[in-house]
Length: 153
Image (cartoon, rainbow, N blue to C red; front, side, top):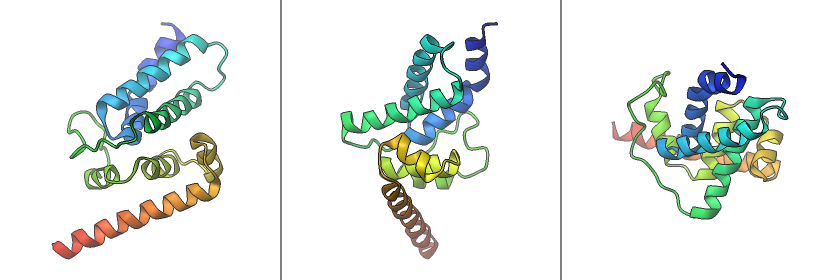
């Protein structure tokens, strides 16, 4: 098997989960993965870190979608198919969908990808201060949502 095909076979599902965490939509996630892998295929021999390259392309494509759409398309819940929610955090994923795209991207990169503020700022093309403020606002929204839910129980 060719190295590129092996990479796609081994890492494809993880890349899809990453795309879903970024977009909140299975179709958009699949599009991100497909576009990133198509770009990688043409540069396979010149790229040193294939995984980092694909994830960076996915983030940049996702950011470009913000500029094209200017609107967020929310989904009511995370799909039940597949093994996306392996930790039983369906409620958390649903709350993430309610966040604005940039805030969700910052949280995904910080906590799901374990990226530093500097890396996130570079990937998203924003300042480190903006990364911190977006993360703070997103976490505040998640906390408020949880407190409100608890009050209604």
